[in-house]
Image (tube, rainbow, N blue to C red; front, side):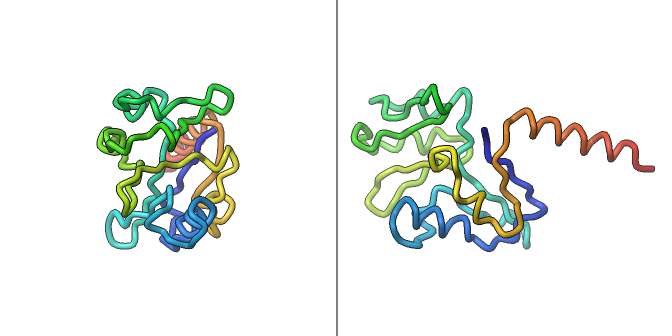
Length: 150
């Protein structure tokens, strides 16, 4: 399962950031959120989070194997006890999805153990939690509908 984003729906309210930081940090502090809403251009908001990449560069560069894939849930998990905070994973992530807090410690999205709160809280359903095949089919359908429109 992955989080799918409908950029046309996202209004930049940042409720997802607040609920994420509240769950993981115990305080509503968006800078410590595992999801970040970026204003890509005027009033175009893009949620950025860990995509749980199949060929994850963050895992490859970790010198102590603090990032591993949970085979049961298919999630990339960060072991905070093993992590030495070298930040190699943050620099390797092509999406900028691994955060670095004010103490220099790294953190990343864990999809809330396959029940992401950001998806639940989104008031405009800009975020959905779906199987990747569903996303692929939806994109194909959207293209087909555009081709059929005169």
